[in-house]
Amino acid sequence: MRLSKFGFIFMALSGVVLFLPILVVSASALNGGRSMLFPPQDPTLARFGEFFISEPIWRNALKNSVIISLSSAALSVLFAWPAAYFIWKRSTALSRVIAGLMAMPFAVPPIVFGVGLGFMWAFSGGLGTIWAGILSLGALFAALPLVTISIGLQSIDDAHLDAAATMGATEATAFRTIVLPQTIPYTISGFFFAMVLSFNEFIVMFFVSSSAYSTVTLQIFNSLRNGFTPTMAVAAITFIVVSLVVFSLVARFGDLPRLMGADQSRR
Image (cartoon, rainbow, N blue to C red; front, side, top):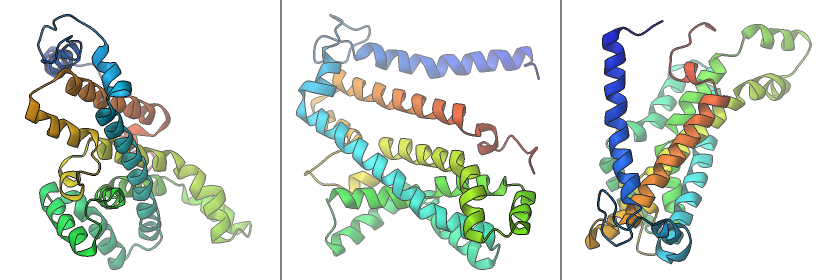
């Protein structure tokens, strides 16, 4: 369907509004000095070297962000898969309660969830540990793979399962040969969605972390005491690039139209 003239103008303006802040931040990362100015003065790539190589504070923060985001995303998938499968196989009141409980952390305001986790980890002795951050984000973003995996399970043709049962396949065999292969793209998509949001998450990590470690988002907040610096702009560019790469992979290898609710042809 072709866009109308008004629709084209609206999309163009939306693109400009989204592109201009990215342009300003990207250019500010090129400043040779310690101030984040636009246009940049004495353009250089030295700030990128500081962020990724020479500055231990930023390098360790990036390492922590990668570890926490990958681990929490994997944990989210592990939380979501049994729940999604149970909901798909048993459409009962209990399955709806499970779905609601898993979606609740993502639905409530992050500051409420963060404060609650802060008290819980403080009483249990886990406050300030990196595994507390991983578990917290894993629980927070489990709703994302729950949704994507559920969509994948709903897309499975019942005729395939009926044929497998007719051929004498057990439920475990049908799961291994039919269910799991057809839901791999949806599982990977859920993992990537949870990973990106975990990589960018600040509020919950602020309440459950400590001075012993910091993620990139926390380090940006800590660095604000010294004003806006070009290195912070490099961190923002990193977030943008990671998000673009991940969502491009989801669009390329996943079922993005169905994940976004636009493809109803397989119902």
